Length: 166
Image (cartoon, rainbow, N blue to C red; front, side, top):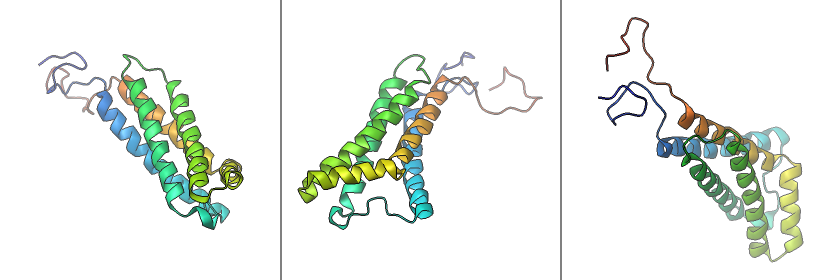
């Protein structure tokens, strides 16, 4: 067994988390933060995320799915680099935010046939704070995923454990 970080697959001495594992954890975290955050904002403001009856539930669900796909795509591109920059989390947040709003606008237009109504719903997502929750979830989860890949920590050890033991 190699003692270097990122050595053999059986190496437990530490090293960065594999990009695919960090990507999976961060994507699940993004979805959880987005769903939970939208629920909390809805609960505290007393407003539905999309308060227009003609939109139905499919538009919001599809927009969340597209935002998650955009987040995952941008994060995967970042994590493939040798040492991804923490500033990449801004890109994950921006992509999730913009794709969420675009999906609501396009989906709402396709569903209702009213471009202005769909644009006003997308605008109310920004002013009501719902779209900012999506951006915040993208920022936090993207930052966490990048940190997982950049870290060099290993499993927790007691002070009396030898560093040369597996």
